Image (cartoon, rainbow, N blue to C red):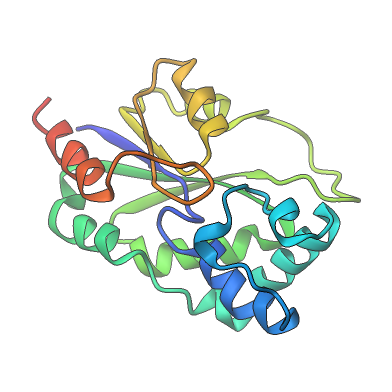
Amino acid sequence: MKTIAWDVDDVLNDCMRTWFERTWLPAHLGCTVGYEQLVENPPCSVLGCTKAEYLESLDEFRQSEAARQMEPVPQVLQWFTEHGSRMRHVAVSAVPLAAAHLSAAWVIRHFGLWIRSFHFIPSLREGNLAPVYDRSKGEALRQWGTIDAFIDDNRDNLASAERFGIRTFCFPRPWNRGTASLAGILHELTALEGA
């Protein structure tokens, strides 16, 4: 049985869009930037803020009811409903230690029928004293043994997995200028079952 690893934020859900629309824009009423203009991640230069301001806002969002109520990406949830039981799945997220349990709860609530493992790499934050076990998602995935595919929105994460021979798919988002369509990626994942 094939094993697929999934990033959580901006792959299984629309974290950046939800944060931007529900947290950033209400706090910055003069902001004229739209979601599709967030062509960098982190979007500090696009939004005219410091990285510290961005992370503070994002971390506040992660603790909010809006984050808990995020819906899954509809096409991804539909794919899991139709094909998820034919493969094994693991979630791999880079999330602050203080919000990891919330992210895991969100994954299990929406994808727990199929995703049985949640692994996180603590995002660096001031005062974080967590030991470093993995320096990249690729290193974390290597510990799982055979991972047949990895889906992420961050090209650096994908490159770290490719170094270990893992097939990767770049989930299309404004900041990665992904050229593959989501429908195409999901079709290729379906084809893995017979490979």
